[in-house]
Image 1 (cartoon, rainbow, N blue to C red):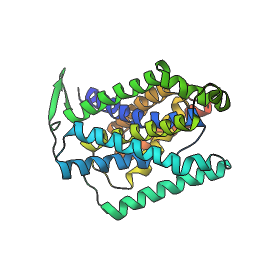
Image 2: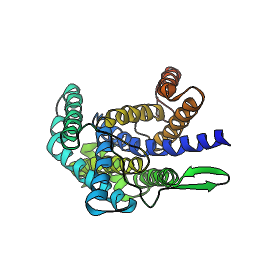
Image 3: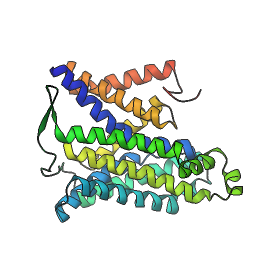
Length: 285
């Protein structure tokens, strides 16, 4: 029963990995652009949650919504003020711009919040729940289920709605989309907003259960790249499957070998899989 509890916990954590990684794969699939500051978006979502709880005494619904909105707005601003300009330059300029943005956001958070680890006070989701004999923290259960719902919802929006069709049109052929009356800059700004918003709400979900500091964005960013590469760049379903797999592998590795080895196992299997299938699980060759 304990091992089954470890498996469920790993899948729930992997669902949150999938949610914030889906934002990264959205940007890659639409714009062929790698955002090295994506992990810092998750970190900022966690601090937005903390501020809402401390200043407004808001609950999980309030700080989750606030994190999503705040990061959506930040994503649009970053696109308008930085990304749309560096996209015209060489790939090296694109890489260095988001890498520099990551450092700016991280050390700004260090300056404002210090390097100390913080955590949310107890919320209405505190406590444990018995699910078929498996004792699970209520916060972790709700966060994981909600993350899956939001990831599936993002995929549905991209594949079954008019907005999704416009985003796809811009990703396929920017000039042809303009001839059809679609404004590429608006669609790309929306994509950055959605990407950052998904990272923000994932950060809020993580903040319910785990302590953090400004340096946690670096870890989340690396995890997002592993998830996206494993699932296939540009594939939201691939990010969902890969996130669940990585969360599961981390949990089992920590249970059998110890927490210090969980990342080693993940990255070793990740390299091995990419050697056999470089395009990832659901990517195109």
